[in-house]
Length: 131
Image (cartoon, rainbow, N blue to C red; front, side):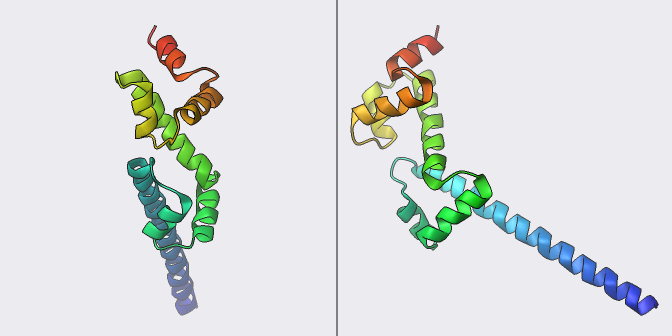
């Protein structure tokens, strides 16, 4: 009976260790993904990010959705919006320079992006926030 008891303890410990390892591996992958996107938000795409991590784009898309609750584009746009907010409120960069830094090919796309997020133009957002 004692042997069965210890066998069950070892089995339970192995399950706990494997579960912890899996959780840690996912955490590392998510952290690496956020770091990559935080450094490459201007040029990152689903395909380029998948290539960087040696994943298939469909796998990366499903992985991001499963572990963040957001699709890849929304996640990337959230990072861009955070950077836009930083540049608008903490620098004297021109709106055009910020748009270029964030990887927008046209200034009007950046205006639409900010207007959708904040309900105003980038210049008015900056002006109102700094009052």
